[in-house]
Image 1 (cartoon, rainbow, N blue to C red):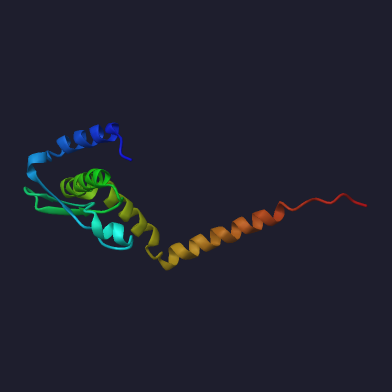
Image 2 (spheres, rainbow, N blue to C red):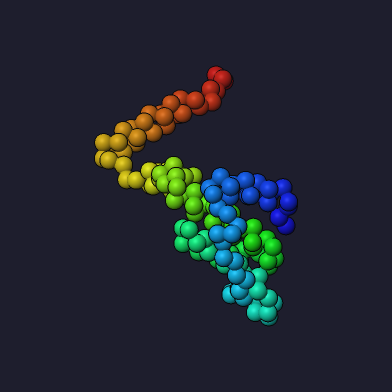
Amino acid sequence: MVTSETWVKLRARMEKFEVLEQDLDEHFIRGSGSGGQKINKTSSCVQLLHRPSGIEIRCQKTRSQADNRYWARRDLCERIEEKVLGEKSKKRQAAEKIRRQKRRRSRRAKAKMLDAKTKQGSKKKLRGRVRPDE
């Protein structure tokens, strides 16, 4: 359930990126996927078109039409933010971080890392329990 407080935050974010309600074309369509008769009868899927940018969003995260309206607008703001900020956007930064983590190490870096692990292992062996003389 989306609260009025979260709507207020979303409205402020929309103003920040100059997304106006009159620039949005909103349609309610029948969703697809699992859900049986209920999904086939109700038009809870929200389709948003932001005319100035040409970005189209379809949202069917929940069964509630009101909640889907919120989520569609939030996704639209994220897309516009990514378009405006480009490299600086949070999604882009997270993807870049994962890419760096998965990047293959050079042979020298890998050898250095393995050498450090071996040294650490030998240090840990020295931490063994000292037995009193019997």
